[in-house]
Image (cartoon, rainbow, N blue to C red):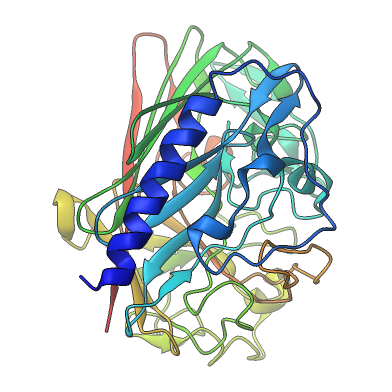
Length: 396
């Protein structure tokens, strides 16, 4: 390890401990930070925690930094359980921030993109016509995405202030109890999500949940990745390899048709590493519906690290940074940032431009409650929802 990264880890550890200690200090002021002010964040130390110190909905917000001794740092806030930034070494050993984010809690409150870096629930992805039946009873949700419900409704987990505990410099534990019928979902759902930076430069996300009534649950994280670094331009030259022979085609409102279609011979064939932009402009009805990629891929179950399914490999064409995703989930939602319009100022001072980042969300399939042939997302009292995903970083 070079001397700069030894210094980076030491400084990041000190800042992380300060952030953890500050979360136990009483604060009564509104969430601070002017979302229009911009500070460069080309290193973890340059991200000012003061923009996150305050209260929202009567609960304290803060910034936390997770580190290891291999040059990896993850900055998170308990407002929305968001990944604010993620720094890993590129092919030259330079710290590169591969997750786009905003430099204050207020900025996230005001952002036109609600899901930046957020922990998503109760139900990641879409539910058709904002309705589902469970045990013969129909439940109505908020229609916040055309006629459909998306990512838990109008006030999903992205707007929750999570209870946060940082037991060590590499781990953050986030907890929240979603009340019975919050956003229309039955049952009091107790959720715990543990984010950990591992010794091999992976971000481990461990989700658990229990309920006191039958319900549905599908948790994920909505980080936006640019493996060349935040503000480096679009992601069309970066490559994707998704270990899926099939995907779930959608209708014009992005609800799955119920079919599992082969990717072979279509723009959705990422079985071999392919530039994200290579076929994104193809004359294809599915691409038109999503205005690019915004589709669920049916994972093959390819054996990978940690005893989990190898979901995907993404590579930065300039940085050489490689992100391998391993998961227990059956699906991966690949989204190419088609609806970002440069309306939000990121922590680097850049804008969240069209296709300036991509999402790779490990999850169950969209609209599973209305699709009996899809893997079930039901959770009953006495059962524990538990799923783990890893986002592992290297460089070449």
